[in-house]
Image (cartoon, rainbow, N blue to C red):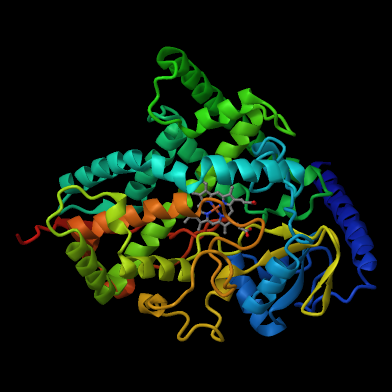
Length: 500
Ligand code: HEM
């Protein structure tokens, strides 16, 4: 009986999906869609991604089917762009037409109806919140105001490294904690008790919100969310997250009452609460909107920066001459200084090249955040209809042999004496995206990356734990939106004592 129920249910799912799929496919027959790999009924091209990292699978498919491809991922029709020229057409020429973001059940639930910035639909609400983000929360002045927090956290981090000298350290864990402390204190003013729970939540979020979950690929077949267990998992995550934020808000409210206006600098929560209380906005903001913004700040602010630092250390260990050159630069610049500030890192041009090269080979979000077409347009001569998902493979662009010599080699020197920056105007190098939906957190993210790396290189010499040969470091990426290093990096620091 139970068996026949399963068979009937499966059969029904197949029929429903097939009917919807066919209807959509017929609708697009009149369009000149980009070419793409052959599709199987119902699943389309899902099998070509199975077990692979999407940015790598798409790059391999693009080598066969071209830099603009149409793929069918279950019910999701998507165009994958893998060349800088076409990325420019999409993100510059058709920036407004492609400025929407896709919605998933998970993003709706965990981002309070996508009222954050990153996944909010394009429109007046998004414009208002992006402006608040860029001008109030992540402006150069605000980022600078958190300098003392970063320096205090860095001192603590350096002290913990000194205490561990000669012993192996899990660099991934140590850095993530350090960066998360900075983000937490900048956001809520004090080390918040909920920090650990927030970190665990983010880890899970990156996995479940990749957009490549089976249930997300068949959004019309609602009960797939139920039978796959994703619905209950997401509901539980939402409940946990909401409780974490409620506790943070309560603590903050208590401190506000105790301290009155005696804060030295406003933390980000205080900035947002003041904006909310002042009113006068076209879309008055609620506590739920503020919570959604903090998911962006934590999601965008912690793992992207820590991932970059880990990859930079792994690449430098693999390439000792790069490590030596970066250390020489830092040690010369800081020579004789007992206290190092952010101003001291400004002239470190080789270190900047190391960071740029790390972000070229290991962009933390290799497929950027997906866009959705809101006005039909043409890219590379092909039609992009409304509602089509558009995925830019930024990683494929940054290793395109037409633009980069020996593209898969780690060679920071390639950035010396070039004008290539992070502003998203060179489409062969877009680790922060490009156009209207580009990342507003570049300064906030990079200042920590520079400061942490500079101090790690200045104060310590580094070698691999377990007698591992640098050439054998496993550089595999983890699954999820974020291409973090899958196998944690364990390094042994020894104190560097400068000559007087
Ligand atoms: C190394 C650090 C970082 C990297 C590599 C990075 C990368 C990215 C990328 C690739 C996007 C998508 C852009 C697009 O779709 O064109 C993005 C968007 C975004 N990032 Fe970042 N990010 C970083 C740090 C941060 C920080 C520190 C914050 C906030 C504290 C942040 C907040 C955001 C937000 C809110 C968006 C969405 C913008 C929109 O949709 O309008 N990011 N980031």
